[in-house]
Length: 261
Ligand code: XBP
Ligand code: MG
Image 1: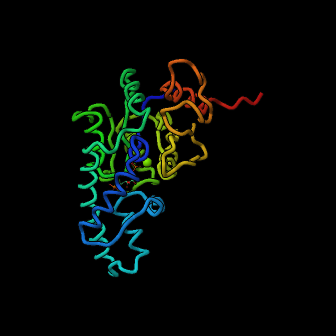
Image 2: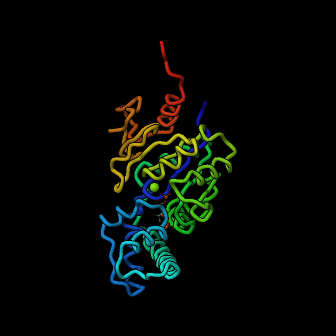
């Protein structure tokens, strides 16, 4: 068994978009809508229990005394705030406030150099992915990805496996032959439920994500330290980031039959 594609989660994995991007944009949207609401860092972390910005607003509304009582009105308000938030998020991103996480560009470049197909598997809105990757990878960023699945493309967001199943179908590969890179329990659960082996690059909101069955987990692709399993040639000069060979080695190790001798 070999690795035939690399599947990227977006929020938290490609970039730390949540705390300084989506959260800030939501707060600006509340203000623009005349609402005296504010999501601090901790509250937003609680709301990350659900995927999807509309779903996140609805979760918050379910706890607010000043929320519209009727379901229709709540949904309309959530959609309006989400639309405003995405426009404000795009402004934050295009102002260069959200860099790619360290080690991400190196991994993308390596996959391209070695002709390994890549996919984007996110349940964020397509416009948000466009804003982030258009800025960092260039206007033709889509050409670098053989599969792009976003929130609008699925009936059920992560942790449902649908986004991963779609990506694997678009790539026409066996799910077991891909490696997903994820940061959150919801994302990792989605990948595993689709049969896609997953590597966890922990993010600010998920500093302790360790999913049973993950190929490996560590603090980010930028360092070879504090990863489990330990990358093979840790400390080798010239190598600082996690490389494609590390992913391939973790994948092969997990796929190997148990040595029962
Ligand atoms: C993350 C999400 C999204 C974003 C916000 O998706 O759950 O909801 O936080 O984007 P992923 P939207 O980690 O799969 O990239 O407001 O467009 O939902
Ligand atoms: Mg994520």
